[in-house]
Length: 335
Length: 216
Image 1: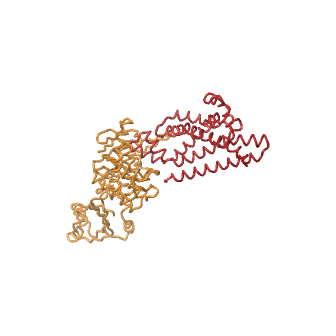
Image 2 (image 1 turned 45 degrees about the horizontal axis):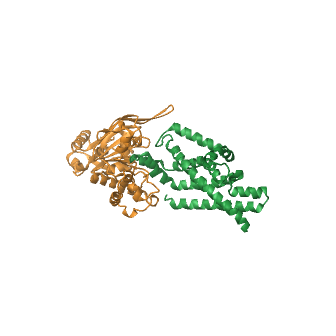
Image 3 (image 1 turned 45 degrees about the vertical axis):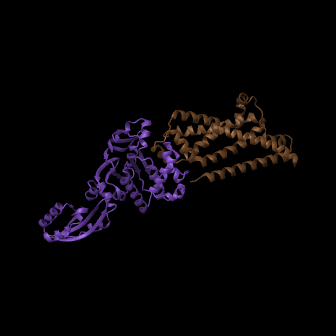
């Protein structure tokens, strides 16, 4: 669906060079929700804006359904943008227009007939559950309601792609969840591909299929969300995951009072259902001490983490670890 | 009392006539200028730096002229357009031209208040430049524009009083002719009171209208 090749964006002001996006390559598949996560200043916002050329890329190409958007002239770009919806952190609603007119806005731009607009807007109002707010003005809405209006507006003319630029960052956790589930519905029911940038791992965990991790303008890791949680390849990714994982871990690891080998197990949904720990205890001559555990509910599956202390002789411990690995559990020896 | 009314009412009508038409013409000149200023700016939707610089210089130049001097300089233009240089109708020309750059600045600042994000949104939806101007910038800035027009009208009431002193007619003319030259202080005071009431009511109407229209 989207193929980004060697994308760079540099800002030059006088002698200062700022490379906001550095040589990014990534592909987004049709129908997936693709997350881009990074701290502020990592370049993710610039990256997503390059996709519809709100920012002009300095180098590289972006293909959207095989059309190179970086090569389009102004008019073709304008028409192309009609097929890419976008939502923003601060909603960007037209303050002087009511909910109805805000949603009708893209349709009016395209010169739809009044009756057609009326039909479509009412349909959308129902879809985002705001029929009762039809005549309200943005100033009378809550943040979540504003974002629903913005989403209805973004999908009004049936785009094939929806970009979310920190779409949930200004919302409280509960509202964030409801907006994310709306986005998920849009993906499943309407088949719209979604690319979202965020700095919240919660968002990625909740709704994304795959995720790119950005740091200093570069994409340092692209992974499915499941694999990312089970086995993050980069430190940045691990740090992001730890923002959700429980804080208990650090407290346990630091004391030196533990005698045995400390290991961290990460496993996905299926392995979690098998009684692995009790098998370990029965088959190997080790004592197992469970120090901490947590389960992260991802969009389609669960990822569990367990920190165990294994007490026993070295050989047995080695065998235990290789047994766990055979059982498709990711094992990391901490100390 | 009736004597006073007979003096004041025709002058008031002259003032209203001058202010009304000069407001309209200054808006016709100033609004497009203000819009051009905003959209031609660097980073805006119709970037034209050279045009932007030229417009800025012209507006600054016109605004730095003291009104009375500008008016005298514009006598030939009044002569060309209206056929004379003295009288209420002839005064509309310099009034409108003097106020136009002010209106342009007022328009510029109103439009700049429109959230950059909303413009970005319109771009992301594939809106054309004219669509962004007419469907986003102007409607979103409307309450602020109304404040600006109110300010313009009040300025023009002041200018028209000044213009009265060099043959423009209206309340300013009345105040000077009777109050200053003939020592009829009561006439001067009365005309000033009428001007004050006029300014107050314009301000009140402007504020009310802007408030009613503002949905923000």
